[in-house]
Length: 228
Image (tube, rainbow, N blue to C red; front, side):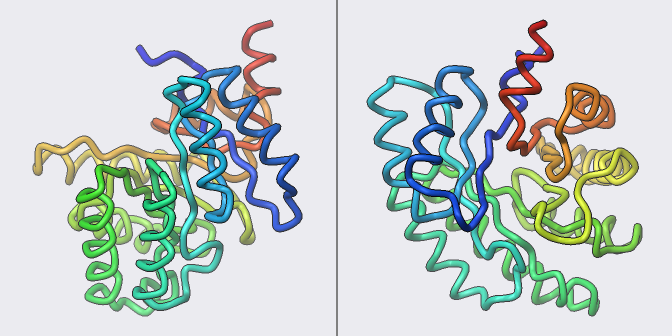
């Protein structure tokens, strides 16, 4: 069974985050041995240096196409290329939500496929953010199918910057959908819940619903509550 601390991607994506805020974030991530530290791309290089110097196995996760997902595939690819060059181990990319809602599967799947191939060639993990609060249940199912079939390693609920975050119901739906397809392919595709997870109760509910990873800014508080 996975250690509780390894469920957490310790996250700070606010636009006013300063280098001192980021230093605190990565220090906490190393001290608590979280799964990863998740940041905007401009912080990847300094965080990777800090983690390597500390001899830690905490991963560096960089967001891409964040938070709207509406830029071109080429723009996302270039952003991801830079993050990988700077030392990112994981990429959290926002799906093109408008194209998904329009039913343009070819666009959505071509983008995920090309980005997944880029990440895997570098040995990196791809998480695709589908922004569940903007999708119907049928659209969530289709988005999950596209992610699994096109090579994503995780399907992630939310950016935390839209009209809602993760819900237990959406995580359960994603888990059922992903498991059904991934089993046929012999792949282990995981679920990341993010957005609005602030307490131990929230975290446990998401894990019970099927989340393999939790994107949280309150990771330290949740873990301290767990330890107590």
